[in-house]
Length: 265
Image 1 (tube, rainbow, N blue to C red):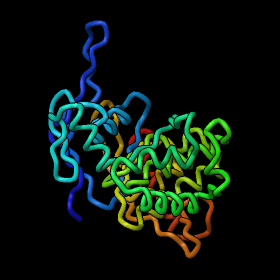
Image 2: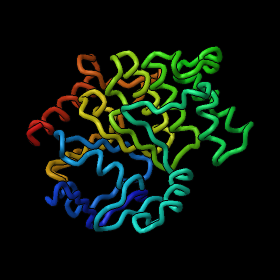
Image 3: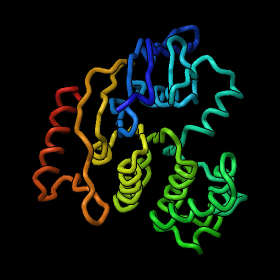
């Protein structure tokens, strides 16, 4: 598959009280179109910083980032904002919904930046159906939602414009196992249709959904594991949860655990 993201000598340095902290160090990285790339590593390893650099949310100190054939690291803030609207979807651990707008209007506000009202509403309804947000729930305001419902709305908002790349930063970090499964199932489903996903996580079950796992430590990629696609069953779910009888899933889980052990996770 062709590359949708490439970096060359990507570096990020922060200054704290005159002390230089090198968070990312000369990273050369390629993300293939349609892949599900997972970034793991200990706290402070640079995972979220890398995600923000790849998505144009933050600028590298040195090096280049190319996304969907466009070099973005030297663009103006306005140009980066236009690029993100056209090519990037986001979901963060903290749910940022606008309190003054209904659930549907939160999603429509993003969709209308690039699409027409009728098409955006139809796409929103399709995604809401997939994550179990009812028409009645769509008229609620964010303060009326549970944490799991808010996360599912944020996921729909991030996918509404069918982005070139969907970036997720610890998307299940504040969810229980049931709601985590809903979010991961939808990510798995859209990835199966060709959606590129880059996800930061510390969670083993979430990582098992990826086709490729990168292990980051001290700002460098120390290793990577090619798991291949996690296949969906007839119900649209994966068999990648530990303890399932499916032999392929058990082997996949064992492979991931062994890789992380080798990395010192």
